[in-house]
Image (tube, rainbow, N blue to C red; front, side):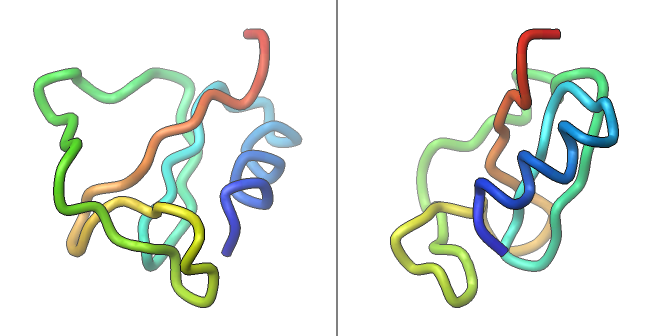
Length: 68
């Protein structure tokens, strides 16, 4: 999945944030706790190596979906 597709899925579902990991796209109304933010060891998206999709396990890259 691409960053753009995950953001669009969350936007049309009226969610403020999209969280993209190597395995899935999740949508939320609130941002994750800043103490959980990881900035090193990030992985490329499956089938889209030019984009970053979090890390292994439960970590994800976070994107704001719009102007909410």
